[in-house]
Length: 403
Image (cartoon, rainbow, N blue to C red; front, side, top):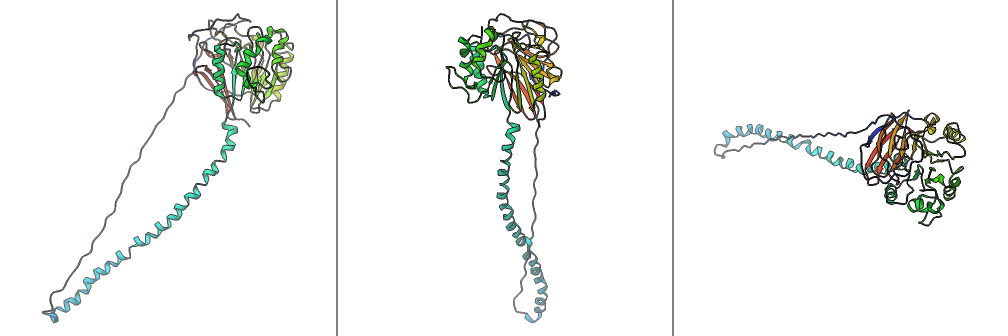
C-alpha cells in the first residue's frame, strides 16, 4: 500500500551541528556513502478587519386658538361657527392617535416568542456533542514512539525515556541494540525494563509493574546478537511469530519488526525466507499504514554507512515507511515515494557526520539524544524527531485517506 508523498516538512539538522558527543562505540558493520544535503522550512500568515454605522428619526407638534368676550355675541357668533374648521386640526391629531406605534408594540410582544426559540436553539450544542464520539477515531491519532540504540543504562537513556513517557504513546518500537554491550541476560532488565517496564506485557523484571497488554515492540540489533542465538532477548520478551521477526496489527497501523542481522537463520537478503515472509504479510495487510523497521540501515551517510543488503523493494511490496538505527545519529531520506529514517540517538555515544550526505538525504542531525514520535490518523501520518530537551528537529507529514 504505497502512498504518494505530499509532504509538509519542517526540519533542522546538518553535518555542521555540534554538541558534546558521547564516546563512540566500536563500529560493527559495513559502510558506504556519497551525495549531498537538503533542508526544509515553513512560514505562517494572518489578517483582520472592522465595522461601523449610525441612524436617527424626526418628530412634529400641534397648535391652539381662543374666543373674545361676549360683548358682541350676535356679530361674533358667525366667526365661532368658522372656528369648527380650526377644530379640524385637532381632527388631524387623531392620525397621531391612530399611530401604529401602539400597534407595532404587539410585534415586540411577538418578539418574545422568537426570544424563547433560542432555548430550543441551544439543543443543537447537545447534538454537536454526538460528533465527538465519531471524531476520536479520525482526529485522535495513534501515537507511536520510536527509539534506537538505546539500551545503555545511562543518563542519556533516562533523558530519552522521560521524553517518551511525556508523549504518553500507545506503543513503543525499537530499532535495535536494546541491550549493550553483549546482549547478556545479566544486563537486559537494567538496560530495558528499568526505563520502559510499563510498556512491556508479561513483564517479569524488578523495576515495577508491566503493561496489561504488550505495547513494546523491539527489533534485534547486532549487540543483542552477541549473546548466543539471541537467547536473552527472546527469553526476556514475549513476541509473536519466532520473536526475531514478526508483525503486529494495530488496526490503523501495521508494524513489521524485521531482523537485519547476518546471524538471522532465515537470512537478511531480499530473496531470503524472512523477506518473502514480509512480502506476503504486506500483500495481505488491511491497515492504512504499514511500517517496516529493523537495525542495520538501508541508507545512511553516518559512520557505519548503508547496509545495501537491506535495500529490499519495500515500497513495491506495500510499505509506507522504513525505519532503522545502528548509526548513532538522525537522518531522513526520500527513497522513491516513501520516507526512510535512520534513528540511533536513543542513548549510546553520538556519531558525528564525517561523510557527505547521500542523494536521498533530506535532513540529518548529530547533536543530542532523542526519539521519534509518529502520529497516525485517517487523513495522514506524521513523523517527527525530538531531542530529549524538547527541540523538534524534523517533521514530515504524508497525507493519506484511509477507508
